[in-house]
Image (cartoon, rainbow, N blue to C red; front, side, top):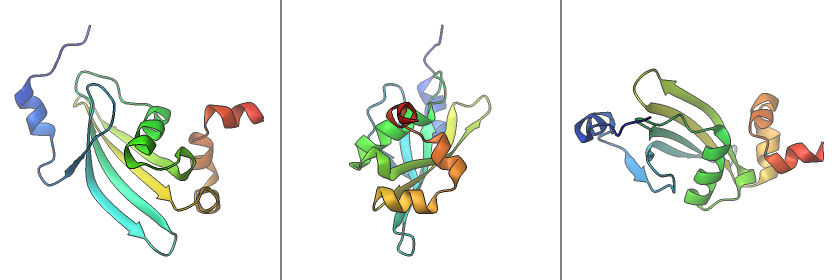
Length: 126
């Protein structure tokens, strides 16, 4: 049975200098800490802070689908590089890469990241 966290505790966890990203996930707050376009690799690199006080850390697939919808890009262009949860706090740091094309993603992302980000329909094809 999870309880809602006091509002003042959640306020303490919110970054003061980050832009809020509207993502359709009940009870989760997303903040863009860094947003940079890498012209050499043709990808957008985002560092996010996800607040999930009283809830579980979102899965890589949940993040991939919800962020692709929030950012308005095809899910095959977006890769979750890492999700690092802070123990006992209800806050996670998420590193995201959004490529200009799915082919560029397959060219630049390491094999283990591609494997971790496999979509359910891609696993059925194997």
